[in-house]
Length: 481
Image 1 (cartoon, rainbow, N blue to C red):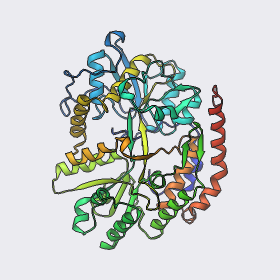
Image 2 (cartoon, rainbow, N blue to C red):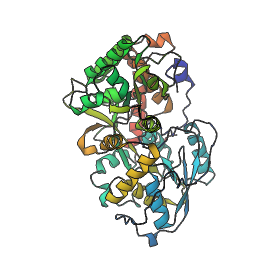
Image 3 (cartoon, rainbow, N blue to C red):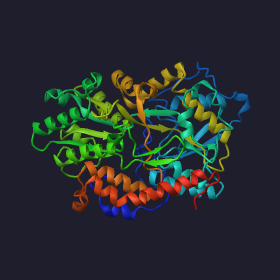
Image 4 (spheres, one colour):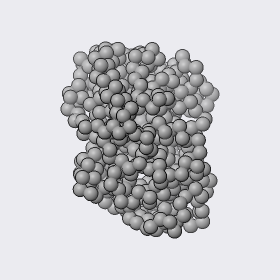
């Protein structure tokens, strides 16, 4: 996905359900599969590179093993959940204590929806799929998931305090989604810490620790970096909703009544858009010369850009560079505070697995989801998972502890934004608006439009989608046609 985007991209988007996990917040390598064709159906374990020992662990809050029939589950997604550093310990415990295995059918994000539809219609539903940004309400309205409340014990300690988040995604009186990972700051700003020091630019991490990391500090860093050498730019990548959420107001939220609510006309959203437009206007948010993709590391590594905005998953590449060459030094910070906001608000994403309609092994899948959640709450499994992540991703202690801190929801003022949950065309329009308000693209006509112009051109269509899905939410038996 390049930063050079055109309006034609919107018109070309189909309304087929997309199950991309790109911004879902998982700490696994969900972004790595780009091929349109299935690349692997493997459950091969990587015990040489990342051995995991769970023999001494005894987890509580789970169904007794004798009550679960051993089975081979099928996962459909775009990464291997049996070897991913953050999931592997939970999988190993599931495998060794319940006699269950998971076969991973790995396909590209763009191919998942078609493959899932085919598998359900042919009576071969997988047992697990990733949560994606369009699950609520789009996918739930298609009756493609299995309710899980009969298989999940919300009184178990691993789910304590999470009811409000889980119940945000109730559909027709049922719970289909029990997130096991809660990630404050799904988008980080990654930077070359060593180069910042060399250029005498304040370290954003130190500014964050001192409570001085706000929009003004970001803009100052960007300007200093750009001015340091001809050809240097400010920020590139993918900011998603992070700048807007820092105002404390999400673009599209699930309100207290469980309904979708659009805040596109809120003055706080307008203020964030104006700040982003200023960055763009002043040349502080451009893709580097040559049209780098937003996932490329070259702009940071080569000293061309000050920050890359991207999910935490991307930082593993920089951590590995530091392992290979100790002279390199990279770090990351969340999107900065809105100086006009009363608190430091940061967007939050959730991640977990869901069970498709027609799945054969629902009870086993629910046990696995609980094992994954315990990797965040059980002290011994947390330590085992930490070791697995650090070996898998190459994080040092400072990096790991900093990133881990953003999973402690109680320490933040999290904002949950759901702008991509409606039909794919609407989701793409909103993405285009968000990207274009900060990043310069190829289409000069589109570039010349302000946030207000783009919002007003698309407002009626977005409001119509909100109303459509709210009608379905109100109807407890609502199923989209």
